[in-house]
Length: 100
Image (cartoon, rainbow, N blue to C red; front, side, top):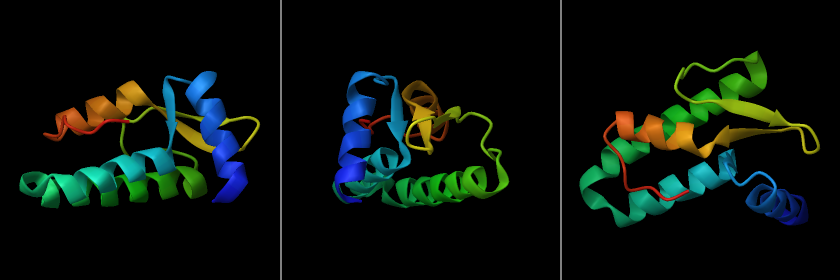
């Protein structure tokens, strides 16, 4: 990832505070998997679904998960997700302990 990812994360934290990167979602879910043993299987399944959906957006141009709203960051050409939609998506699948 490196310096480019660091700059991207910095811009997200200030100008795009209501968005998060796919890497931030993956990191949050991975931390939750390691810390939350009762929901471990569910979190892993959701991480896999998120990765599949992210790849679909990148290569097919549309989302397979209607609840996840996203946009393409113009400067970095990255897909960013609205934090509210990620949280709602997780809550609809029975998870509400992940901090983005």
